[in-house]
Image (cartoon, rainbow, N blue to C red):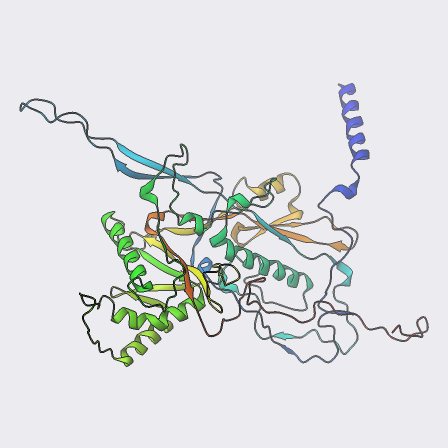
Length: 493
């Protein structure tokens, strides 16, 4: 027995000699990253600042905040559906006591879901640099008039900071908010564009299937790959036609038939009242509601034969009232029913540089019809799921069992897992991750109108960093001033 232990010790010592400490990824680099909020070179380390500070960040908005969230630890769930029945077999009976035909068996389809994995880390900083003050002229009682991090988007998109007052005097909090903003920007877009085909080879980065996949026509059994056409969504290509174009195939016509088809299936499948949301870009909604009243009030007024001349009289006051009411109430009127509209910055928007079918100064994007609840509101049809780090026998339990509880913590009910890197002397850093997915239980009650073109006079500012109409600017780092002194009598130019 002693010989085995000696050999194990020798092996561990050899591994330690060949694996220097600098190879461990958990340590900070030793190079702090500015800017700091206060002190020499700090963004607000400027003497004599007025107390009130105004943020100009455009808050994002979208469907993500309207969806409920549930924790889960099931990595490969299977959702069963009854998709039909086979025809009966055999022959009709000849005599009264003959056996009749045998009823056909039921058919089913299984669907699955996949978690994504998204992570960001705070900028590294020097712990004893925090709290420094340039001189008595620097103030720490600055008042942020409007918080740059929108808590209304919910803790699915805002890790650990959604209920914390943004405080420019707290360096760690500011850096956590920066992480929260990155999560918001990424997840808002991933709601639509998430695609597991983009996963990294080592699965350190993973994307969940977004609505561009979930609301689709490729539906197959999770175990056999057999097509399941009854689960297909209703997809209509508007083929880059403008919403204000004349003709029979107007956007009113397309959306009307889509909602009629979805309502028909919901009613005939005994799904009860379904709560749908029509989701689109804000600019598209303004342009759509500008033409919707006229198109809606004259819908199907074409006289046959087409050569017949007819005159329609439409009250302009009625059109203006309908337009303003739809805009103020965020809805579209279809077949006399009000369908709520959710404005979403995360939907991909194209312009002429992306597609030659789009006119100059025009844009194109998709319109999504998402079933939020079914069965008269008693069952969520579309919702978030997240890997629950706070679950029994989960990540935090493993951290406690291994003696690493001080290095890890979760926030937001187990949605986010945070890791405190081991400090490198005075340099510290934290990182956070979330593993979410969107569950769409009724894809056959969802729809999408693709490639809808609209031409506004002016496009509003985008909220997601990197989008065409995103605007920021300003100073990202300030250089601390140099004072004359006995040891530095000449200030460098």
